[in-house]
Each structure stands twice: as structure tokens, then as C-alpha cells.
Image (cartoon, rainbow, N blue to C red; front, side, top):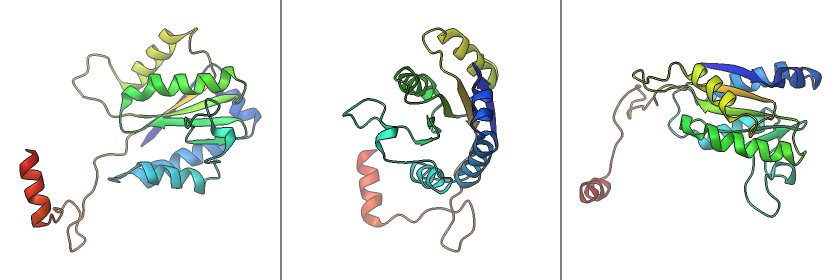
Length: 181
């Protein structure tokens, strides 16, 4: 399940570039691919590649001569994020802001984990994002769409292919785990 929040005119920029439906389809595809997945990083890269978001080119570099790169770029719109931890929001916004300030991107899309503790006194994830984006202005002022994705818990299959089974661990691995504990 995902939800997109638009800030500072990002929706209008995506509309002008005829990318609103493309972004929606990309987020839906990412959500479909990652739901229940155990290892998400490579699956995210593959999903962006399959949806024609450029990967591994100079247009994706955030800082010259450094390895800092966006997850994907299409028509001067950059995607960045980390769906493993909500706390990546600040780092992701800063990375997108650098590209915007250097006039490499016209807007950004930030992927964040929508799941947070039910006991959080800070309200819903959407409320927290709205508050943080407002608080960070004028330092972070780029047009940005924030996509909150909840991929659920990983689904692990047993040897017969049944969901929620246990994972086989070799004797050597068991000994390594016991030593570490």
C-alpha cells in the first residue's frame, strides 16, 4: 500500500512533464514488487529500471566526482529514498535539494517507509511528513512528492513453498550464530 503527498508544486511540475500517471504507475509497481519481499534494495533497482527510470549515469550524480547517486532519474525528476527506515526522510530531502539547487532536477520524489510504531505520539506518518516538510522550509524548498510505502512484513517460505515457514540453517551457520549471541 502506498500514498503520495505533494509539496511546493510538485504535482503541477509532474503534470507539465506528463509524468503524473507515470509516477503513479511506478509507485504501484514498486509497491507490488516489494510487498512481502525480504531483500528490497535490488528489487527496487530492478523495478525502477523496468519502469524506465535511468540508473547509473552522470545525470544521477548528486555531487561531482562522488558516488552519491539518486535511485533513478527521468525527465529531470529524481527519485531517492530508503524504504527500510522512515528516518531517511531528512537525508533524502537534502540529497534531492542539492540536485535542485544545482539545477540538475526540477523536482524530486522521495520514497519513505510508511510503517511506524502504533504507539508514536507524533500522529500518522502523513501528519509527521507534513510537519517535517513545513519545519525544514526554507532550507529544504524544492518541489517534492513524498511516497509512503508499507511493504508489510517479509514472507518467508519453507522448503515445500508454504508461506511463513522457517528457513533452513546449516550446522556451521548455527554454530556461528550461537557464538555471536
